[in-house]
Image (cartoon, rainbow, N blue to C red):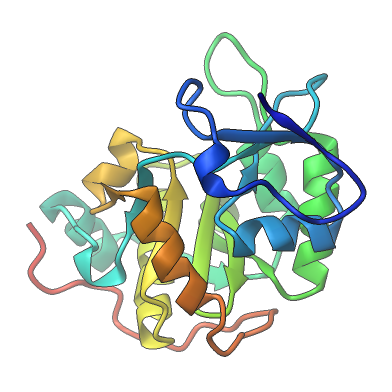
Length: 237
């Protein structure tokens, strides 16, 4: 039976999550910064639709990407070398979240509600949430946002208005995180898109064990600035 969260920030143990739907752990609570940070520190994230109670998840297995396993196809490698673009970080967080919230497909709808945007914008102002932006022809062409605690990065969502724009932003992010000694990126649940970039599933128990160490690493508060580097990954497929 699912637990309804009260005023305290305690969550049930991850092992209490349902098998179907995979990883549903608790309901209720709020989207305060302190609760969201507590959730992420424990391998839990909010994900719910408009009109639903807040739902908290910790799926098993967990989709992650280890920076040294980033996979770059030949076509993306060519784009990284030749296509004119600029990548920035933490310059327009709300705009990136709003773009990620845009309905996709004929069914419409989004889980990135106005309340979610406001909550993560607060976390951005506190230095925990970050956006990576890809610009083409002076316009925001794609990007992504996520959370960072200690040496752990949690990817949330990405969008692309131009071909490969979100992938360009993601590659820049992964390269920079590797330089900052982040060793794992949370991708939450499996998608073919993330698998094509090198993401893979690991057991929730392994994820939690790694997470426990990484969140205690030295924190790098925002706004971030990326160090200049060559984005081309050697050994592209």
